[in-house]
Image (cartoon, rainbow, N blue to C red; front, side, top):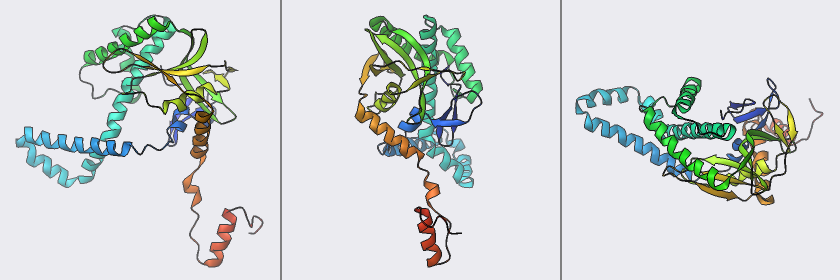
Length: 305
């Protein structure tokens, strides 16, 4: 499937270990790239929260006989209702991510086996995802879900037919020890004689910041297998996105993966290492202790008790 065995979710994002059972050492490529400010999402968070609140009003309008009981429940437990409204954006993102994971898993099987997975195989993936982390718990119509996946697979089949990629690696983890990160590319393919990193996206659009993920793969130093074996990293000529939109079809979007993009990624990696909580010291009782504390915090008075 699409969750690398050497990675694990942590409070600071997804992390990688270099061998089974080893310590988590490096942040994932997506975790580092995700450190970039996303101020434009604030409006979307508010829109999703207001949409959920209005849906609650619509429910009361459709069910007036339950209005009094619902209003009483909200009054008794305002915090639960607030949390539910505030979680609207996160819930939407999780649902979209689950669907993207399902499509990725289907494309992974196609890339490895050379055959398009059928509904029985797809249904098995859905059941496994639901058992593992509760994915698709709100899905009422499995057939409708699989039809949506089929539409994306139709687009992926068009890409395979038109570009004739030769799959060299599928769901391959890569690592860069010099900078300190690891991540997994959907595929390393040969297209027209060039080796390229290919990532599949089912998002609404292809964002330019995907280039930060692409350049991190291109600049990786080693391939990292699930058993901890490190292999030579082939020289990649670039990276691209296979975009499978909801309306069907596909788009191939090249990514810019030059030095500027890598410098930005490395800056984000350094920013990820910054732990803000460590920068506030303990309260001090007076001016002498304040000055001593500030000197110590900035590397001075290291020999004083």
